[in-house]
Length: 135
Image (tube, rainbow, N blue to C red):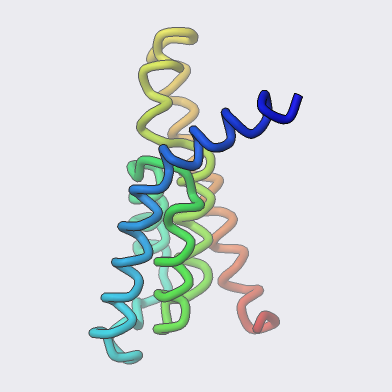
């Protein structure tokens, strides 16, 4: 029973490990070289939309990007932009394209990407208003 759980978990962790290592290295580079004032990004719908689109296009699990997102937050990136990326990245990923198109068709996948994008933008917009109550 334990090997049935540990073996797949170990295999999945090893698949994520390269992306996780790259994200940790990237976050440390950003932490070292970007002064706080340079990481400021205007908190507007355009940048929220960009973060959502990047989240949709980013491969791998969200776990690998959390160290980088934490570093960017510490450097001044608004929570709403981080939430946009996280939501879109969780809802859609490029690896799902082939499976979903194969099982459900291209129209299904396109609609799902559009709806996921709108959800990410909507949630991030809500966070714009909630940010003053956070921290």
